[in-house]
Image (cartoon, rainbow, N blue to C red; front, side, top):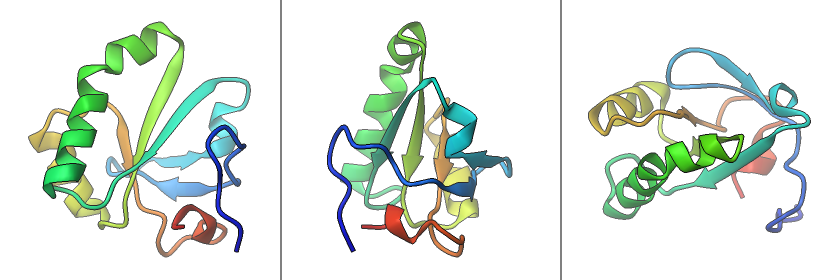
Length: 105
């Protein structure tokens, strides 16, 4: 399987976010989208990364960009993590979704 390189288009996906909403890459066609991948909810590195995106979120919005975080934690873990750190963007899990295996690597 080929890795995704910085600046390359992401493969199509349709995933459920921590808030229960379905999110598809097609929802963002023609828009700026920042996808960031982090290791695990509440892990020191993942928490720091997620909070850095939270703290800069208004800058992304001002640049007309949306932010999505992706890790393999389950939706309930993402929900608790997002609420506990006041994350204003959605968190996605690529596991258990058709066509999403490319996002794991």
